[in-house]
Length: 405
Ligand SMILES: *[C@@H]1O[C@H](CO)[C@@H](O)[C@H](O)[C@H]1NC(C)=O
Ligand SMILES: *[C@@H]1O[C@H](CO)[C@@H](O)[C@H](O)[C@H]1NC(C)=O
Ligand SMILES: *[C@@H]1O[C@H](CO)[C@@H](O)[C@H](O)[C@H]1NC(C)=O
Ligand SMILES: *[C@@H]1O[C@H](CO)[C@@H](O)[C@H](O)[C@H]1NC(C)=O
Ligand SMILES: *[C@@H]1O[C@H](CO)[C@@H](O)[C@H](O)[C@H]1NC(C)=O
Ligand SMILES: *[C@@H]1O[C@H](CO)[C@@H](O)[C@H](O)[C@H]1NC(C)=O
Ligand SMILES: *[C@@H]1O[C@H](CO)[C@@H](O)[C@H](O)[C@H]1NC(C)=O
Image 1 (cartoon, rainbow, N blue to C red):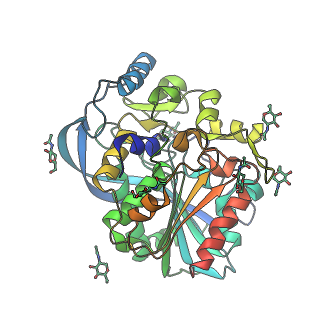
Image 2 (image 1 turned 90 degrees about the vertical axis):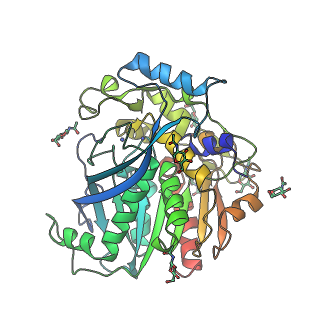
Image 3 (image 1 turned 120 degrees about the vertical axis):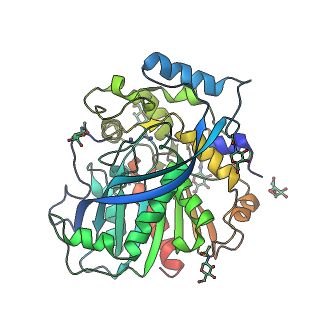
């Protein structure tokens, strides 16, 4: 049911590194949030993939053209070798607990997608309009956001051997375990801005965007007990349209794109190089005429580009490989919500309406308690950065509540 082309669609996503270390949530006075580093040990079964190595912008173009060349192999046919890696990464995380939150013992763990770091969930421009974290806290939930490896303030490991979805699922699994065993709460209590009394989280919800949704999806496919509910945004099986062109991403060698921002990134790290390519992938200027909802403001695009983050040259392909080898989540019994922007260019080539087959979607989660899709009108792939994003946040938070969370 999931063709490699349609998987590529879903996975035409993007990847990591920090500007000024503006910790998430800290732009607000009395923020109920604190940030800290977590040491995350993982063992992952990865691959050596046959891709063009990238050490400058000429290589970056060669890399993209090679992936789009019609008679070159698609993933997973680019696997040259299986490898096992054993590493410990530093992961930059932010825990927020609403002081009077009615649902504070329910924690949402949010995994950002490519092109961003954890600031995706809590942008410093107009948090009332664009911050998922703020909306979740206002609804009473606690949140844990983190910079994926290769991104923001987290470790920047080897782009070829480490920066793969298989690694990133293990990072999320171990982080989740560290919530369950109280390590995260201890780190929060010992951080520079300790939060109130330590809390035991009795329910854990995983929220993802794009690559972060693939990682959260793979978590419930491989480890069905790791999560109580998932909200997967910017990710769906789309059997009719896809947008698998890597060349459209305008990606440059990260240290050449910005030697200061990406001083700690090396061979194999690429980044969406200019605001035009960033807009193409993440923003829709179209308004939904029925509801008069949608579009975006220049400031939102400027902000998103200013906090852009690299990805690795094998990251997207490793995501395709992982989803194709685990095309369903056969044992996950919690509820699943999928959220798509109506005019998502990456996932649905510009219009998601009528492109996905609900039977196929439900078959991916055969024993889930509920499978729902929310289509957010007038919105592109970068959902929270559009106008009227709060209506989409509300649709997810109301759905969670309807599912007993
Ligand atoms: C990698 O492992 C898979 C699954 O065990 C196996 O089918 C495949 O042949 C291996 N590939 C290589 C290149 O060793
Ligand atoms: C999940 O939990 C159930 C109930 O405790 C158990 O029977 C099952 O083996 C667990 N599954 C996995 C994959 O750990
Ligand atoms: C690069 O890493 C060093 C050491 O961890 C850190 O102090 C510095 O802020 C990083 N630079 C950037 C641009 O992230
Ligand atoms: C706008 O949104 C509505 C409600 O979500 C939807 O039915 C409609 O198809 C969307 N598109 C247009 C062009 O109105
Ligand atoms: C789309 O872009 C045009 C030109 O900049 C602008 O005037 C308009 O407000 C934008 N519309 C939306 C919905 O973002
Ligand atoms: C949706 O997928 C199911 C199962 O793959 C198939 O039987 C059905 O015909 C499809 N529906 C449409 C409208 O394509
Ligand atoms: C959508 O956002 C626009 C621009 O911020 C605003 O003028 C409009 O009232 C919003 N519509 C709804 C239904 O909230």
